[in-house]
Image (cartoon, rainbow, N blue to C red; front, top):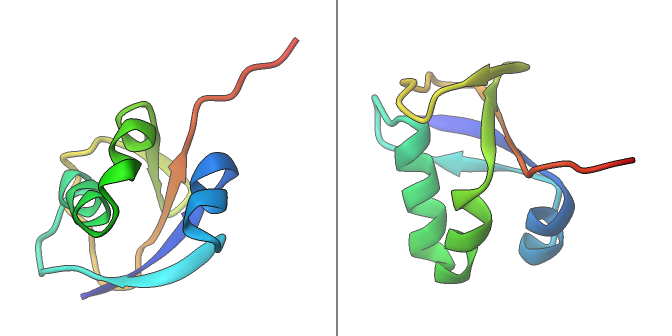
Length: 81
């Protein structure tokens, strides 16, 4: 299946793009998506370990099963003042 991945901040800088399509096995979860990204670039592990996942504009658990065509955003912590 194919999902559309949106990346922000340091993750976008590291990957060199803000969005792209990613092929995952059927019934993949957010955790599986993070694992695939870490396989492709082991240096992403630290960023992903502190990130949240949103699927179709709603925060989601890493255990959520993804569906064909989902829009998946990886959101790093935000601070402000």
